[in-house]
Length: 207
Image 1 (tube, rainbow, N blue to C red):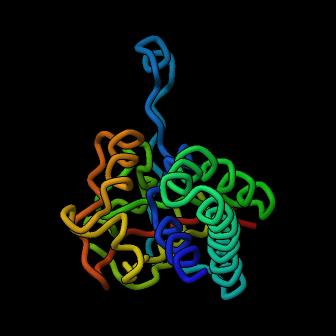
Image 2 (image 1 turned 180 degrees about the horizontal axis):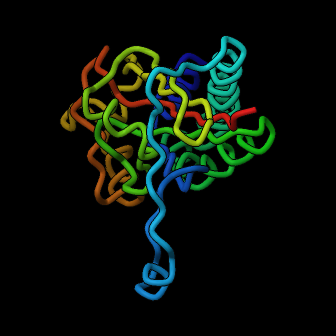
């Protein structure tokens, strides 16, 4: 049971798989025609001197916990029945829908990103890029120039997460093989316990 819980926690950090196609992730157009037909939209940035209300902060923190709980529960099931390789597959294939469901249920946008990405589609929103470049390791709350509240919440690597995100020579062969199959451009290894692994990002529409 301890192994199941450990693996569950590993993947809540971001393989993400968050893609993860995750809701809100910035995905490039798949064809040149689409790129040319899409108008240029100015990036949403953090507004100066504004902060979310306490209620908005609590709502965003609750959304992070909801996503973590739902993803963890599903990964525990996969670990119990299929082992680590099955959990990695769930994170790759199902995590995007879980994030989308939480977004829809709570009326916001939520996703994850990493210090180094496992999935290249798991990009942060524009407003978070400067905070990520600065390796912000404390919860950050802001109001964006479109009036939405936003949060960037750090994820620190726990010891059990090393089985998928630790030094490559310490990752089990079966896990290494599954990661290579599903994430050929994986950059999310060589972390140590306590390292900043990534962030949850949340956007809450303004009232």
